[in-house]
Structure formats: C-alpha cells, structure tokens
Image (cartoon, rainbow, N blue to C red; front, side, top):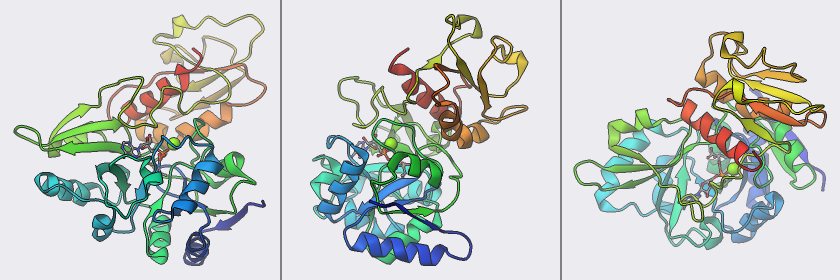
Length: 341
Ligand code: TXA
Ligand code: MG
C-alpha cells in the first residue's frame, strides 16, 4: 500500500478534511492531527473500519480506543451520562473541551464493542485541532482514534513521525503540522463522591490535576499492574527501540565501557549535573535556558525520536519536576524506562 500525505495548511485544510472524510466514509483509516499527538482514525460506528486500526497498529484488542466528537452536542450519541454526574460533566466539558481531556463514561449501544474492547464505558474527547473536528463533522459520525504509532512505541507528534511508524500500512495521512500540546490527553473518570465529585486520573496529561481540582476531589487511579484501569497504560508503553535510563541523581549514572549514550536533557544546563557528566554521543534539550515544562512537553516525543537512533546504545533521561504537566512528562519517562532498566 502506498501512503499518501495531504498537507492541511492554511489554504488547503478544508479540502484535505474532505478527502479524509471521504476515505473514512468508505470504511478506510486515516492518520489525523490533534493538538496532543496524531491519531489513527476510523468511523467509530463502523466495526470493520475500526478493526483496520487495530491491525495497522498491531494493537491488542483488549486496549480500547478514544472516540473523538466534533462538538459537545454529539456526546449523547456515544455516552449515557448518569444523572448524578451530568452537571459536573457539563462543567468540565465547558472548561476543557475542545481540548486535551478525555472522559470515560458509560457507552451507548451505538458504539461497537470493538471500540471499547467490550467494556461498558467509552473514552470520549473533543480535540482542539480544527482539522480533526472538521473531518468528524464532514463524516457526520464520531471518530475512533488511538495514537498513530505502532503499539507500545513512541507517539507521533508530526506527520513525518506518523510516516515512520505506519508508512505502507495506511492509505492517507493528513499533515496538520506539529502538535501544539505534545503529550496524549489526560484521561479521567468521574463519580458522584461524598461531598464533591470524585475525579480519578487514569492517565496524566496536558490538563493537570491542579486544574481539575476546581471540579472535585482529584485522585490518581490505583495502579494494579496486572489490570490497570486504562487498559492501555501498560508499564512498557512509549518505549524507544533502545533502552532509556532514568536516574534519580546524575551520580547514579555509571557508563559502561565502550557504549554510546545520548542525553535527553531538560534545560541543557550544566548546573543540573548531567551535561558535563559524560561525553554524550548526542544531546537533545527539551526546553533550553530556564526550562519551561510546557515547552518540554511539546518537544518530548520529538526529542525522544531524535535520540532513538542506531548509533546510540542507550538514552539517559533527566527527570523534570513532578508538578503541572511535568507529572505527565515523568509518567511517560517512567513508562519508557520501565521495560529494560
Ligand atoms: O491525546 C490522545 O488521547 C490521543 C489523541 C489521538 O486523541 N489518543 C490516544 O489514544 O492517546 P491511545 O489509544 O494511545 O490511548 C488511549 C488510552 C489507552 O490507554 C486506553 O486503554 C484508554 O485510553 N481507554 C480507552 N477507552 C477506555 C475506557 N473505556 N476505559 C478506560 N480506559 C480507556
Ligand atoms: Mg497511544
């Protein structure tokens, strides 16, 4: 299969969105931009099309997909919001949609089981990226779209990253430029709670726990390694093809003789103790200078790809502070390092 890339720039994006909708309407799959990472989309109501997403990604069918709407009014097509949380769901949607937040809600019968891996709930979001919203609107149906990487690999934040993951496996990529948030959406569940609604974070992301506190008591989902609440949040996720090493202190890094190491640095600052620690074969800096977590998030997957190259034996990653969106960066770093370190 040849993979075509349509540029959805200022002049062409409406036409590109139409092309994508046409492909999706015919039961095809298309990689589309969102503000977080690129998604691999299918018509959410077409089980056969959704099966192609699992196949192209080599994704196990126990790992459900996120459904993307074009607007809030479509929510009741995919979710039955329980009365007792209806108000808080509306408040949260008003504040964060369109945006990088996914809510897990009881699903309607219209959503095929393959989308939710047989769960009775569906993960829903409305992306800030106008191109994916327009595609869903043109199609007239929601889109089921997981990140457009092969299963367990690094999420793509540009069309070229999608190509390197899925070239030859999918017919079309809509190139909407680099992703503006850079990390996958925050995933939450919402319960009634005793005094205030209870918001559980299944996956930390660009919408932070600090921001969610306005709407209820926020807790981190319990980590049951054999069965995480978000089935896809396995420890082995986001893995580069070479080992990634995460140390608490720079002194903990002891290079092995003859091995080549790359540094994934937060600020590139010598005061952090990593830059001067070793003769790095390559250094990628997430946010040069004073270090801004939001910038580090945007560049994170891009930088991880840039050091994930053949000449390197292992990547050493500097930790960032575990606050705000830093929590989401640390989550990805821990998972990326969990496999082999
Ligand atoms: O930003 C994002 O969320 C991107 C863009 C493309 O929207 N999508 C994304 O999808 O990250 P994916 O498939 O890579 O991650 C979705 C996560 C998985 O961990 C999956 O297990 C979880 O959402 N999930 C999906 N449906 C769920 C459900 N009903 N209950 C709990 N977790 C669910
Ligand atoms: Mg993913």
